[in-house]
Image 1 (cartoon, protein in one colour):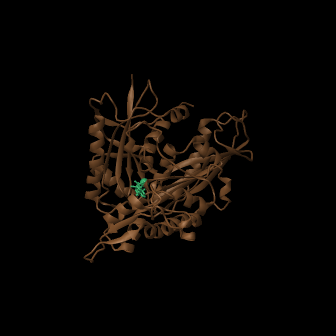
Image 2 (cartoon, helix red, strand yellow):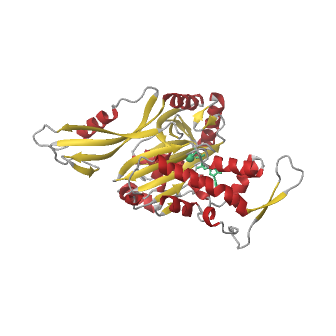
Image 3 (spheres, helix red, strand yellow):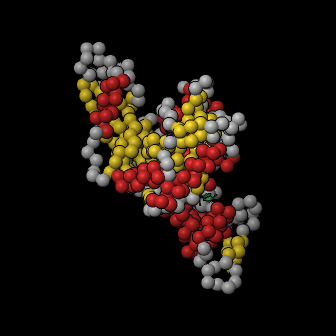
Length: 422
Ligand SMILES: Nc1ncnc2c1ncn2[C@@H]1O[C@H](COP(=O)(O)OP(=O)(O)OP(=O)(O)O)[C@@H](O)[C@H]1O
Ligand SMILES: [Mg+2]
């Protein structure tokens, strides 16, 4: 029985995650056999700021995953984020001159190649592209034209570019850690593989990944990617606001946010008394402000009055920056929130109020895993594995040791199983 390995590296602003999966010929479903996380020292806003530290952070996450999985890796699918990443649509077309007019896979490859051979500004590199739709003799919305007939074919391809310097330095850090980048992928596109249903993409939806340093969006419309956007604002900014607002150290502010934070959608407007998450009594929290000798008591309402406007501001900024000028009601599958920031109670309601469309939380429960990984902050790392397996790709490895008999995560859920086997 043949098997191969896929390894993903998510360079997040709050943590670096490496996940390793095994795919065997008998079971085409990825089986996650190792995972490791580390502090993203040496990175800032998704970019390398200290090469040596960045390499050490990568090495630390990967070696934990390697020893759990019993493999030695040489290549990693790598998910990146940051406002330096942007995307745009590109078109290419030609006439089918052959008498049978039947579109071949070579025609499609040639068309995609033409569409991606665009003039990109100097200092930028194409990291990813994905066909949005094909247009056959004016008939749009076609996703798989191979075997169909037409006189003229056009392809709209979504091309994602990033700053070349940022890419080169990440590549260098990964290399110094002892690995090669198999492929760079933008974080939100990757997360879509683990948290979106196929129908979400087909109907049209907007995935919002609220991370620590960035909030990333990918819009699916007409069955393909329509727009992506990355904003250098995220959970860290909420934590900073809390730290400044109460004059407390950042780690305490982070703790308060995660334990008591609520993004009440109605709070900013009605100033209703905010109740505790678990009881009807308002929660009182003891904090020790910097430079003060005594503790003071704050109520959860004051905490929410800091959090809710910031989350609302992030959503409003995204809304304004979207290239998607049409009514968001044209996205019937609504909004899917993921990333660690999506764990904030009340955030779903706030998104519904700002964007005006139904919202749900996207959790990567598409793999059977330890509960700690069935968490919206792991949607990108799980997504890397699913992306590679759907593309029938593999990562080269140095050697495979004794893989644990009982893998860390066993198999993919029925939903994805069905989808992968379709
Ligand atoms: N229960 C919670 N309530 C509110 N925020 C939370 C909660 N749990 C985690 N977070 C926040 O989620 C963020 C981390 O999310 P995630 O792990 O998706 O980030 P990342 O992928 O490392 O960062 P980025 O996507 O910016 O590169 C942190 O800001 C953290 O404070
Ligand atoms: Mg992230």
